[in-house]
Length: 291
Image (tube, rainbow, N blue to C red):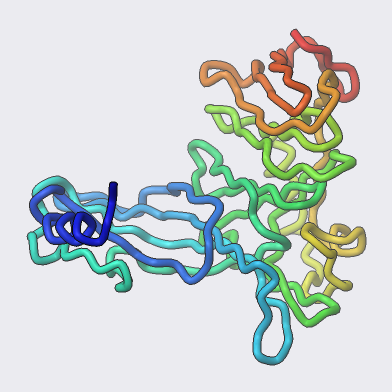
């Protein structure tokens, strides 16, 4: 059993138990964390981006404005084995570690329930919130240079996504996957459907938006819960799903691609079924059946 004495002894032994140890407390609870792209690597350490979320639980500022849920883009310095001196590993649960540095914060429209990085392009994030649509963010310097802060009618704001993924008719909160080769995005939701988007559509939509320009700095009132209103969605590129698989009879809770194929995936849900799908058997949306 872990008590104060045992915990205190463990803290004092941290420099002797581990090659390297770091701890950083966060301001809010976090539901998701993901490793991003490697920024720098040498014989002593690796600098790598880390994405984590902040769930603010309907908090407001002193002036009454809603505090946004956020994605925090950090840069972590990970020391190689037997590099860190013992005095650098004193564990203090209340102190922020210098190895984690915040680069920027993205205001997200609703709490982030799920977050995935695109393999091979780890600076590209796909998120689920309490809404039918998914959001894609390009966290690279070029992508963030194009991302405006959109003001809402209630005084709050959010960071404009690179695009919104559309197709679900009810909230899609948790089931989210990206193929190992980074070419397809899969999602499941309360509408009992598995939807597939093609990353080529996402990329071309973002390019068209950059060429088009336009003002996305103002918007309508915020949606209760999460996501964007119809008027807000019209201000950003929208990409509709290419494939739709039907077979579940209740909410889909998770979906995953075969790590060796971007065509094969399986899903599970509240209907107590595990369904396997092959995207090659359905060339257009609306007709997929379990394999």
